[in-house]
Length: 215
Image 1: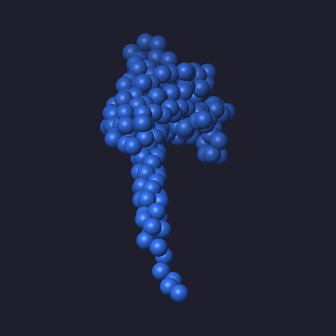
Image 2: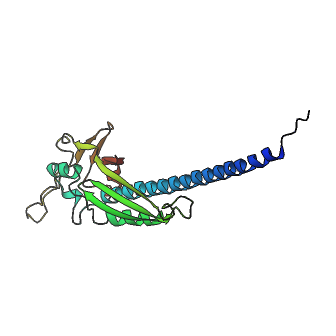
Image 3: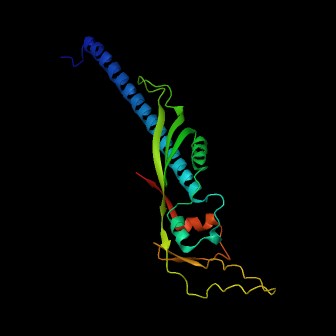
């Protein structure tokens, strides 16, 4: 008795194998497209995050024109530490520039100390077997916030900023400049701002404010 399979059975199985192989290939292509879409979306999110942080940092590091830190009194410093004197003029331009560097177009909006950036990638997913996906661009939103970290502390002891002696010609002495300002921060470190030896604002701001992404 022969154990050979009839030729007809082999002929019937062959189309099934072909269909199975085609289905597997199609599934592989679909997974590939999904992967490309995920990468495009990830690129968009990275561009949005970078752009929002760039906007917040630009605003944090820039004071309004004409603000003289050396002439501010203690009550003025309270406003400074709340972010009242930031100059956000160039912040959104910085965000859009960062988005362009990451091959995306960005739109930036400001709400007080928050900067929200929406981006759309320049590149689309590309040709695919999944209808409607070839022209899809990655889109994402991100918001960065400038968070105050410090408050005005107790005034230094009197005498830490000596009075100016009167001029020798007898004219009234000019008013004393504001004395040093003690700033207490969440980190536990105290910062003493000396108006006679001020540090650059961009350096000081990085200790006074934190920039972070928010949900």
